[in-house]
Image (cartoon, rainbow, N blue to C red):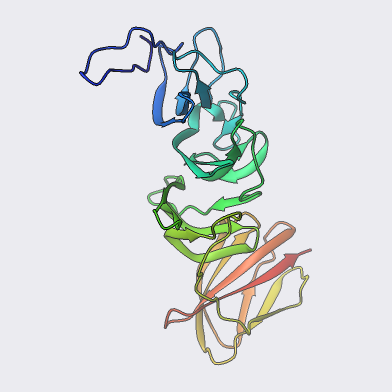
Length: 275
């Protein structure tokens, strides 16, 4: 019978179905109109040594070799990072794409944090390229895993929901997004009706090497968080008082997002390059 079984309407075991795995954790199953199934989870096929995460099988449970079953999903950079990744949501995003959600940070060597989309043959698409979900701050020195699932309503609206505090899409980093976000549909994977981030913040020198001066007209106190190009927090939160200045000389060269939050909840983000 393997790690997955199929039962009939009367609850009896369908002995014509056999999935070739005895040690998989299946987190999600999508039944296609052609009778095939897309499976997500942490999958170990009999006779194959590596951990798989999204596969497609025929109606009898055998592997569909026309699908990209061997996508390399990983969480982190450890040698066994494929064993740490898990896919717990595969769902149709539209007629040509499938949403994939789970605990992973890269797919086929490309950065995708917690969410991605693939075409109907299993090939990775550029949705949330070099981005995705931003995990909440760690608690008790435990590294958090950001993840999300998808729900599409009859009116066509699609939402992602899960464990995250910020999202990176093709338009940049959106720190105001947390736990549930509505997607632009159809055809894009940006955010819909996103609350506007306040403007007017300036940072200088930019590029710079150390102390950064910040100007936010109308605000005398603000909390600063610094996030890298993938949205990971690398500094803060730190309370600043006007005139705002932050010492960021210890950061590695690269692009950063300086996220300022006012006591009243207003938020502003400015990009800064460390030389």
